[in-house]
Length: 364
Image 1 (tube, rainbow, N blue to C red):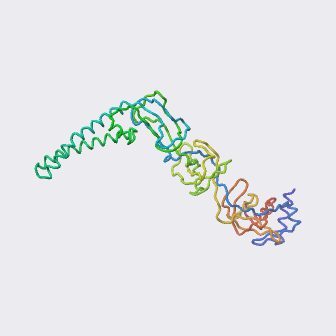
Image 2: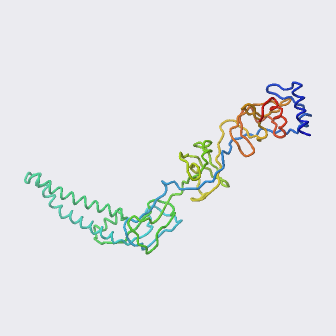
Image 3: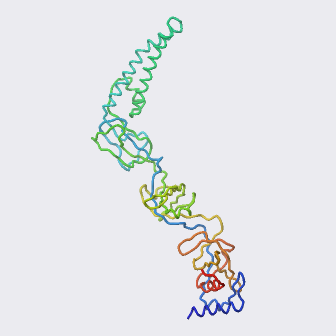
């Protein structure tokens, strides 16, 4: 019955010629009869592109794997998972027979250098005076330099094994061998994982600890490939139930064949203490608007011949204002157009106005 009254009312309007190209004339009584509700344009500064789960991860550049520099047996552990450690702090101690062997070879190399030093200095003086042949000097010099290179190489192996410069110098002075090797933290950070136990035998380069700095975290989001086109570098990512936000810094190019998603990475801004590495969280990807935009109910929007309109109240009825929809947010749309926050539009019961509009020969 109500629909028949509406259609009859629309027919009378068309017959009376009250339709103009961009206006629709209605009295207050007609508005009341049609049940049309009015509302104001709500200024929009941002809108949600999509909601997506995300995983908090540590950038690969901020992670370090601590490995055994020599084979041996773990005799002491000074750090566990979750501990804060300083750079060069001793994490564990290894009893290493291989270290003893390297130390012995280093001391022997130093001794060989010292024994050949006298011959080297003697022949250097003799060649300067023209007493010996060039060939003899070249042989003496080459032999001495080879021994120096061997000693330097062994010294570097001791450094790689974890011995400090002062410890190596002390070894050269005292000739006291020690198989105890201190494994130190390469960075200041947090121990993510301890991979060994006291008494365990480890091989060369066996992983012992994972350490990372947590002053910068990222978000990894898997976005359906058909929605990636709506995301741009620099878009903001809000983390639900926190004041933390992130910025889109990488949009992948390959599609995961298992779930047809593309990975998007975002860099968390400011303090990182509201989220934890490995945590799965809910996020919203939003766009900050640089132009004047408004949020209106979807029911306030009409379409005709590929164009989109809203009905703006004027003194005699409504102006039909073309708009552009730039985003969706639940039951609302974000729009731009030749409108202002002071304008009033039809937000409820606008079906009659849309029917009048579509009565010109188009369907929505």
